[in-house]
Amino acid sequence: MDSSACSYHFTEDVDPTFIHDMYFGPYAEEKFICDAIEFPIRAILNCYKQGLIKGDTMIDFSAAANIYQILPIYKCFKDIIILEAYDSCMTDTENWLQGGEISLDWSHAAKIMEELEGTSTDWKEMEKDLRSRVRHFSKCILENENLTDPIVLPKADCLVNLFLLGAISKDLDHYSRNVKKMSTMLNKGGCMIIIGAFNSSYFIMNGKKHHILCFTETDLRKILSDNGLRVADMEVWERTSSLKTVSYDQMFVVCAVKESCE
Image (cartoon, rainbow, N blue to C red; front, side):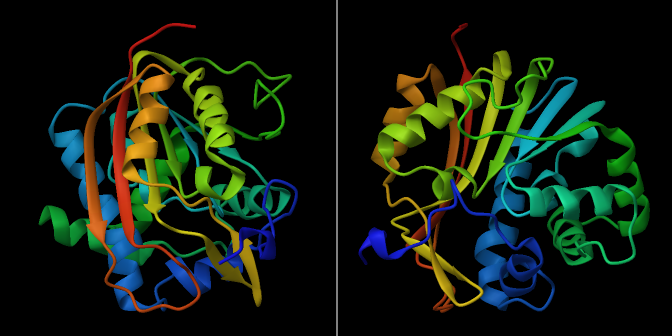
């Protein structure tokens, strides 16, 4: 479809509650949960088992106040930094951090991880432990070179980005610039985990189409290489969902290691 027909999230806020209920919550379409939650959790667990994810500090900079993407690896890190791109996501994440009664429910994601690992998990205890590791929480200004300006964050050993890069990037050059900005947050040798979709173009929120950048695996590998990131692991998952409110052919999870210093 014509991308000009889509709203563009660089300038618009999002509705994390709608997105949770429609796409990522416990009552979302089962096959989309398989594509968008179970596959990424499994792929991230595989990266961890390969020894690619390690260190002291992790940054999560993801879409729509989601946290399920860090459940498989949060115990690796003493310090977790959560960054949000939009005011509405700041509100929802702050509510979750404070244990608000109406915070988004991720117990189904914990159940998926439990089944993949063959272990028993107490979601409430896991959630409490995760919250206790969050040392910093703030909003990013997407237009800034230093996304957290005027705050200067410590360099991280891992940065996780779930479905945000495709929504905030107008074209491939813009995607590359955004990858570069995020890579500056990493120590040399740290890893960037990107979860996204290939050959996507839009998703629907509150009855309106919203932009997702359309690109391929070849495009992604070139962007990572151009920005001093070596692909250490990439998994690609063919679409199984029949959901009509989001377009994509494949989901991907890539773990790329930062090889250069600024």
